[in-house]
Image (cartoon, rainbow, N blue to C red):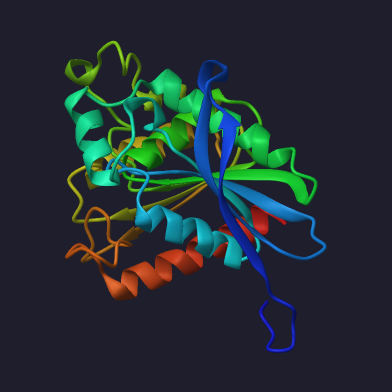
Length: 251
């Protein structure tokens, strides 16, 4: 809880950490200054790339008391503006699920090892990042919680599978070992409300601890204040749900 007489300080910088296959990739780290120890978060960026919104969001989590790292999941595709790199990745058919999981696991190990972290690490993602966060929470042991914001293609049909995406993330649900918060818009087309229902049914089937919130009048990306998809009231409430959930799971 913020008070006007408390000390506040943040440090934010680009760092390098080992990702999938031991590859060194760059990442953005933001952390509160002070005695700690602090809970930690790994952020899985969305398809538009390792962009300004995700830097701001990394800073937002740090401002709320989390040591936060956002790895550049598109590192191997070269460098340039986030838009140019993301366009190249889209042209290549996306990044492989194995690579994304490996990079997020590497970021988890990195942030957990920091001396001012309390040992608990959550993973957060929006859009394709929500999907990658879910895969990581199911397949990379060690995450203490996950926040999936409108992760598309968590539920996949057989025709959507290929060498990079060999298994629908939903199939890994039984391996999920931590609580999950899901934030969804009822006007979304990926995931659709029906796909969210399928996801919820699978979580129930395997007796997983979950909390889903669905918003009327909101579609894909409704937290993104810089695009027409933004929905102010739903976004404010969604962020409150996110930080309440993480406070309960990682403190």
